[in-house]
Image (cartoon, rainbow, N blue to C red; front, side, top):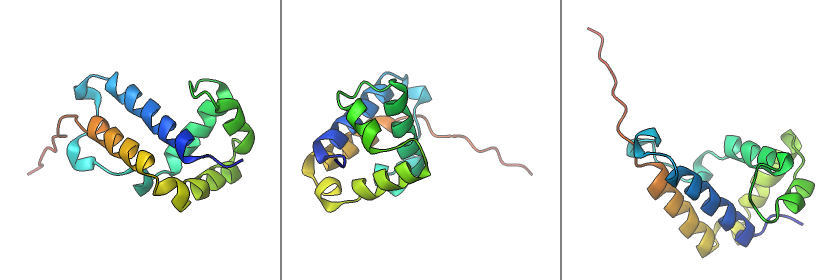
Length: 116
């Protein structure tokens, strides 16, 4: 069965907790802020790998691993399922995505040195 909005919201909440555990200086800068949906390919790969390895703390990780093979096809299927309006437009998913951004992108600005 495809991932549900509730399962994905929990996944985003787990990601937020992981970023909260990092000191702010190790987080990403505000000017790099983006939604999960802006560039989710790599994150989908990481989610699937964690479900398959048992590293994930998600209570449905076994079911999610069974639904999404650790392969290119599995990543594409997960991306398509996450873009389903029943998932993407769910208010709890949107709130969890916003909270993730509010925590993940609180790091210091990256300094760019100018070469003369």
